[in-house]
Amino acid sequence: MDCILLFWNGKVIDFEVPITVQLTVVDVDPGLKGDTASGGSTKPATLDTGTVINVPLFVNTGDQIMVDTIIQEAGNK
View (cartoon, rainbow, N blue to C red):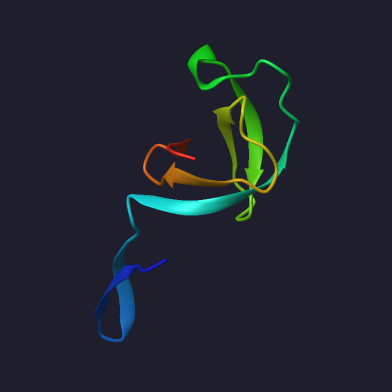
């Protein structure tokens, strides 16, 4: 992940992170048969950064997902 840092007098005074990042799901309850993207339901998932976000029911442990860093929601799988 590339970040933009703004320095002043040798100290970081501002930074920007990408709008979306690709992260790996390290822990999530297993999906059930019939779980689809169109259901609109979500379940909590722990990402490799330790952040817990809600993801669609079809997402499984080990999946890589795109996460919006501003609203902390899962985007495309």
